[in-house]
Amino acid sequence: MEEIIRTADPVLVSAVEALLAGEGITVFVADRHISAVEARIAAFPLRILVPAEDVARARTAIAQAGWGETLRQGNP
Image (tube, rainbow, N blue to C red; front, side, top):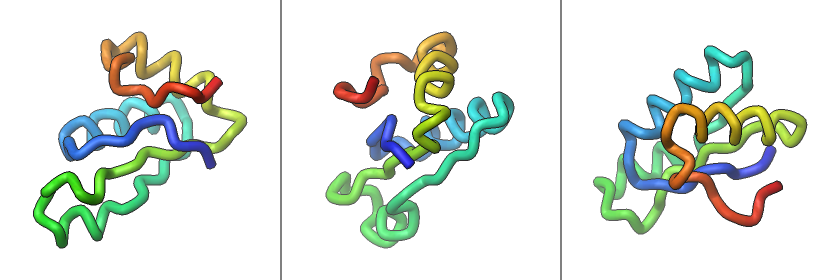
């Protein structure tokens, strides 16, 4: 799994999850529970991870949806 987005915005996470699920891409949201416990103080941002073989498709889908600026840099 590779991290493609790190954010404290739970709405963005839900939207990206739905988008990628619609594309048939498996999504794992890391740190969801600790972020909820910490009341979104941004000390523990949510991380969206996808399988390595789906990174390019996921990044393309997210960019086409208009959320390209949220993508982590450094991932191919």
